[in-house]
Image (tube, rainbow, N blue to C red):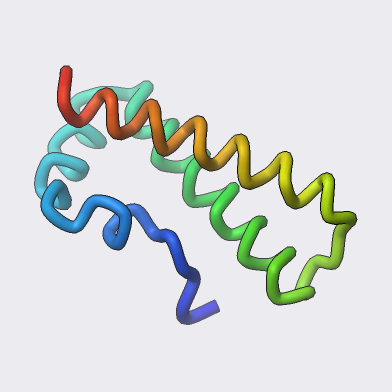
Length: 79
């Protein structure tokens, strides 16, 4: 999968250095990044039918990804 959309680098292009800093300094933040990447890959696989699934399951994955992205964004501005 060479072109998975919605990577954190695309979502937060001005915060790449801050993402790296927090990943190294905050274990919870590092886990959020891993969870986001995993969910993002799963959504991409569903969208491209690499891993076909029902639309409700795909929507749930998208909701989880959005919730983690929101927490990452909050932490980028407060931590």
